[in-house]
Image 1: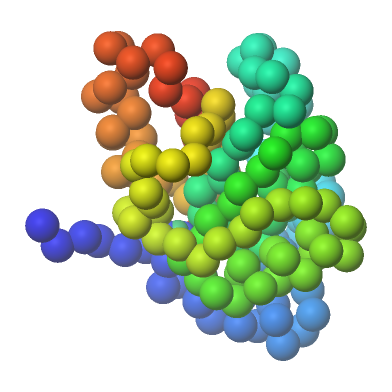
Image 2 (image 1 turned 90 degrees about the horizontal axis):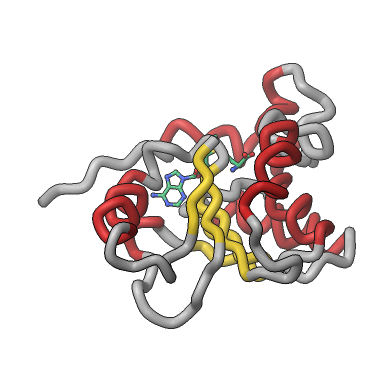
Length: 156
Ligand SMILES: C[S@@+](CC[C@H](N)C(=O)[O-])C[C@H]1O[C@@H](n2cnc3c(N)ncnc32)[C@H](O)[C@@H]1O
Protein backbone atom coordinates (compact mmCIF):
# COMPACT_ATOMS: atom_id res chain seq x y z
CA UNK A 1 0.00 0.00 0.00
CA UNK A 2 1.29 3.45 -0.90
CA UNK A 3 1.86 5.58 2.22
CA UNK A 4 0.73 9.17 2.42
CA UNK A 5 3.19 11.59 4.00
CA UNK A 6 2.46 14.91 5.63
CA UNK A 7 5.87 16.34 6.53
CA UNK A 8 6.69 18.21 3.31
CA UNK A 9 5.01 21.37 4.56
CA UNK A 10 7.55 21.43 7.41
CA UNK A 11 10.71 21.12 5.34
CA UNK A 12 10.96 24.80 4.39
CA UNK A 13 10.12 25.83 7.96
CA UNK A 14 13.02 23.88 9.46
CA UNK A 15 15.40 25.21 6.79
CA UNK A 16 14.30 28.79 7.63
CA UNK A 17 14.58 28.09 11.33
CA UNK A 18 18.12 26.82 10.82
CA UNK A 19 19.08 29.88 8.73
CA UNK A 20 17.66 32.29 11.34
CA UNK A 21 19.02 30.41 14.36
CA UNK A 22 15.54 30.00 15.89
CA UNK A 23 14.53 27.24 18.32
CA UNK A 24 11.13 26.06 17.15
CA UNK A 25 8.61 26.28 14.32
CA UNK A 26 6.26 28.32 16.50
CA UNK A 27 8.71 31.21 16.42
CA UNK A 28 8.20 31.48 12.69
CA UNK A 29 4.52 32.06 13.35
CA UNK A 30 4.69 34.76 15.99
CA UNK A 31 5.13 32.68 19.15
CA UNK A 32 8.55 33.68 20.50
CA UNK A 33 8.10 31.53 23.65
CA UNK A 34 7.25 28.37 21.80
CA UNK A 35 10.22 26.38 23.04
CA UNK A 36 9.72 26.83 26.79
CA UNK A 37 6.00 27.55 26.74
CA UNK A 38 4.96 25.24 23.92
CA UNK A 39 1.25 24.81 23.32
CA UNK A 40 0.97 21.21 24.54
CA UNK A 41 2.67 21.92 27.92
CA UNK A 42 -0.51 22.65 29.95
CA UNK A 43 -2.04 19.40 28.70
CA UNK A 44 1.08 17.43 29.66
CA UNK A 45 1.19 19.04 33.10
CA UNK A 46 -2.39 17.92 33.68
CA UNK A 47 -2.08 14.48 32.11
CA UNK A 48 1.31 13.02 33.05
CA UNK A 49 0.59 12.63 36.79
CA UNK A 50 -2.56 10.64 35.98
CA UNK A 51 -0.72 8.08 33.86
CA UNK A 52 1.13 6.51 36.76
CA UNK A 53 4.30 5.90 34.84
CA UNK A 54 7.66 5.50 36.56
CA UNK A 55 9.55 8.78 37.17
CA UNK A 56 12.41 7.47 35.01
CA UNK A 57 10.21 5.76 32.41
CA UNK A 58 11.48 5.39 28.87
CA UNK A 59 9.39 7.66 26.67
CA UNK A 60 9.24 8.09 22.90
CA UNK A 61 8.16 11.24 21.13
CA UNK A 62 6.97 10.77 17.56
CA UNK A 63 7.60 13.72 15.23
CA UNK A 64 9.57 15.60 17.88
CA UNK A 65 10.66 18.53 15.70
CA UNK A 66 13.32 20.57 17.49
CA UNK A 67 12.31 18.96 20.78
CA UNK A 68 10.40 21.31 23.12
CA UNK A 69 8.32 18.39 24.41
CA UNK A 70 11.27 16.00 24.56
CA UNK A 71 13.32 18.53 26.54
CA UNK A 72 10.46 19.15 28.95
CA UNK A 73 10.08 15.41 29.55
CA UNK A 74 13.83 14.92 29.99
CA UNK A 75 13.90 17.75 32.53
CA UNK A 76 11.22 15.88 34.47
CA UNK A 77 13.53 12.85 34.63
CA UNK A 78 12.11 10.61 31.91
CA UNK A 79 14.51 8.81 29.59
CA UNK A 80 13.51 10.31 26.28
CA UNK A 81 13.88 9.19 22.71
CA UNK A 82 12.70 11.49 19.93
CA UNK A 83 12.28 10.76 16.25
CA UNK A 84 11.53 13.02 13.31
CA UNK A 85 11.68 12.44 9.59
CA UNK A 86 13.36 15.80 8.85
CA UNK A 87 17.14 15.88 9.41
CA UNK A 88 17.24 19.68 9.96
CA UNK A 89 14.78 19.27 12.82
CA UNK A 90 16.83 16.54 14.48
CA UNK A 91 20.10 18.47 14.01
CA UNK A 92 18.55 21.42 15.81
CA UNK A 93 17.01 19.19 18.50
CA UNK A 94 20.42 17.62 19.22
CA UNK A 95 22.12 21.03 19.44
CA UNK A 96 19.46 22.36 21.83
CA UNK A 97 19.64 19.24 24.04
CA UNK A 98 23.44 19.51 24.18
CA UNK A 99 23.21 23.20 25.08
CA UNK A 100 20.90 22.34 27.98
CA UNK A 101 22.93 19.26 28.95
CA UNK A 102 19.94 17.00 28.44
CA UNK A 103 20.58 13.37 27.56
CA UNK A 104 17.98 12.77 24.84
CA UNK A 105 18.37 10.12 22.15
CA UNK A 106 17.30 11.75 18.88
CA UNK A 107 17.12 9.98 15.57
CA UNK A 108 16.08 10.82 12.02
CA UNK A 109 13.41 8.21 11.50
CA UNK A 110 10.08 7.86 9.73
CA UNK A 111 7.29 6.87 12.13
CA UNK A 112 6.30 4.21 9.62
CA UNK A 113 9.79 2.66 9.87
CA UNK A 114 9.88 2.46 13.64
CA UNK A 115 11.19 -0.99 14.61
CA UNK A 116 8.56 -3.04 16.42
CA UNK A 117 11.14 -4.89 18.49
CA UNK A 118 14.00 -3.59 20.59
CA UNK A 119 13.29 -0.51 22.69
CA UNK A 120 10.48 -0.71 25.22
CA UNK A 121 8.51 2.42 26.00
CA UNK A 122 6.08 3.06 28.84
CA UNK A 123 4.71 6.06 27.04
CA UNK A 124 4.54 7.29 23.45
CA UNK A 125 3.77 10.96 22.89
CA UNK A 126 2.55 12.63 19.75
CA UNK A 127 2.51 16.39 20.04
CA UNK A 128 0.92 17.71 16.86
CA UNK A 129 2.34 15.06 14.55
CA UNK A 130 -1.05 13.36 14.53
CA UNK A 131 -1.35 12.30 10.93
CA UNK A 132 2.23 11.07 10.96
CA UNK A 133 1.62 8.78 13.90
CA UNK A 134 -1.63 7.28 12.64
CA UNK A 135 -0.08 3.86 11.86
CA UNK A 136 1.16 3.57 15.47
CA UNK A 137 -2.16 4.80 16.88
CA UNK A 138 -4.01 2.12 14.94
CA UNK A 139 -1.53 -0.59 15.88
CA UNK A 140 -1.72 0.19 19.59
CA UNK A 141 -5.51 0.35 19.51
CA UNK A 142 -5.67 -3.08 17.86
CA UNK A 143 -3.42 -4.80 20.38
CA UNK A 144 -4.13 -2.88 23.57
CA UNK A 145 -7.02 -5.12 24.66
CA UNK A 146 -4.93 -8.28 24.68
CA UNK A 147 -1.56 -6.66 25.57
CA UNK A 148 -1.71 -4.61 28.78
CA UNK A 149 2.10 -4.38 28.68
CA UNK A 150 1.99 -2.11 25.63
CA UNK A 151 2.85 1.57 26.09
CA UNK A 152 0.23 4.18 26.72
CA UNK A 153 -0.04 6.81 24.05
CA UNK A 154 -0.78 10.49 24.49
CA UNK A 155 -1.89 12.40 21.41
CA UNK A 156 -2.12 16.17 21.52
C1 LIG B 1 3.74 20.21 13.96
S1 LIG B 1 5.34 19.48 14.12
C2 LIG B 1 5.36 19.13 15.87
C3 LIG B 1 6.77 19.15 16.46
C4 LIG B 1 6.82 18.86 17.96
N1 LIG B 1 6.25 17.58 18.30
C5 LIG B 1 6.16 19.95 18.77
O1 LIG B 1 5.16 19.71 19.46
O2 LIG B 1 6.68 21.08 18.72
C6 LIG B 1 5.09 17.85 13.40
C7 LIG B 1 6.40 17.09 13.22
O3 LIG B 1 6.10 15.76 12.74
C8 LIG B 1 7.17 15.40 11.86
N2 LIG B 1 6.72 14.29 11.00
C9 LIG B 1 5.78 14.33 10.04
N3 LIG B 1 5.66 13.13 9.45
C10 LIG B 1 6.56 12.30 10.06
C11 LIG B 1 6.90 10.93 9.89
N4 LIG B 1 6.31 10.16 8.98
N5 LIG B 1 7.86 10.40 10.69
C12 LIG B 1 8.48 11.17 11.63
N6 LIG B 1 8.20 12.49 11.82
C13 LIG B 1 7.24 13.05 11.05
C14 LIG B 1 7.46 16.68 11.10
O4 LIG B 1 8.72 16.67 10.49
C15 LIG B 1 7.33 17.72 12.21
O5 LIG B 1 8.56 17.99 12.85
